[in-house]
Amino acid sequence: MPIRQRLKELMISELMLDMTAEDIGDETPLFGPAGIGLDSVDALQLVVMIEKNFNFKMADQDQAKRILHSVNTIAEALEQKAAA
Image 1 (cartoon, rainbow, N blue to C red):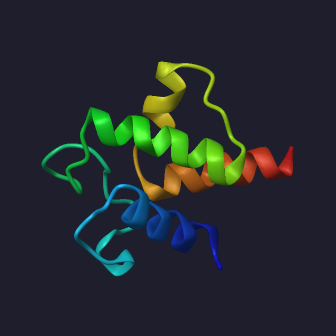
Image 2 (cartoon, rainbow, N blue to C red):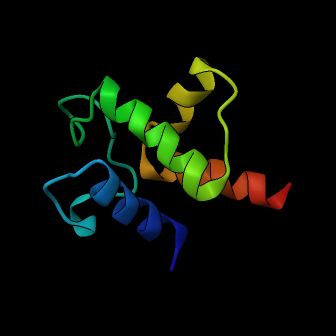
Image 3 (cartoon, rainbow, N blue to C red):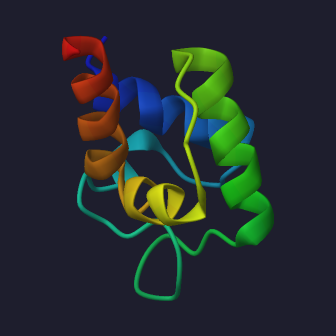
């Protein structure tokens, strides 16, 4: 399964989102009214989900802000880690 699809499906199940993977665009912001509307509690759950499923730890809050912007930014960080 492609990483972006896996991320979307994990987000839906782990964050109990009332939407489908197709509803989440790769570039759609994850937070705020212009995006899918995740909040700070969701951010924490998202970090835990990424650590648990991809063994990827974020170094600090600034890195987390950059990485957790969209499905694409998360996937790119995971792909960079895998390539390293």
